[in-house]
Image 1 (cartoon, rainbow, N blue to C red):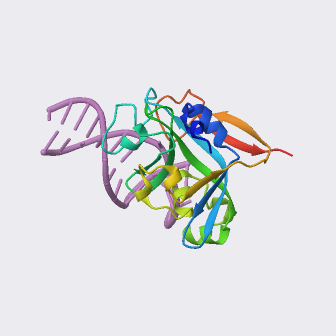
Image 2: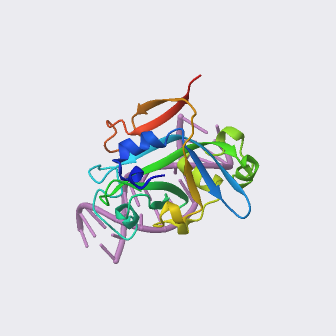
Length: 180
DNA sequence: CCCGAGATTGACT
DNA sequence: GTCAATCTCGGGA
């Protein structure tokens, strides 16, 4: 990926990421799939962690574009974001991936969940890919993650975000639908 | 200092 | 469909 790719505003990058391949290189293995659901957050967004400024928890959101931001949700799950914009608190949350590479490995990571539930939520994506919370605040180029373009034709749907109670009128949740 | 809510998931009714 | 699990931050006392 060229450097400017991650400098885009969150809603733009969120759409760009749909249909792309997200691959993780583990010990002599790799796994990953096609990104099919994303969500955009900015510092002007009351629902964003960056809304009230930088803290120890969200400092990665104010790092260089392309940095990974990992946060713990409800004290239990981890969610993966890609920082974007210009060190101004923007990021894109990876909400769902369609497993295509190393499916068996991901299924084991997810405790043998059925195929359609392996990576169908932000916390599940993180667990299925076998990621470690330590990649928080690490640039994606220095992480086990890799983004690749794919030629798969998709249609993008913009919908209201879910799981939040603020700014629900903004259509910043994006879902990819495969077209023929 | 204490309390409540949250970018969620999975087990159970 | 309902609900508990469990950590961080923000707001109020």
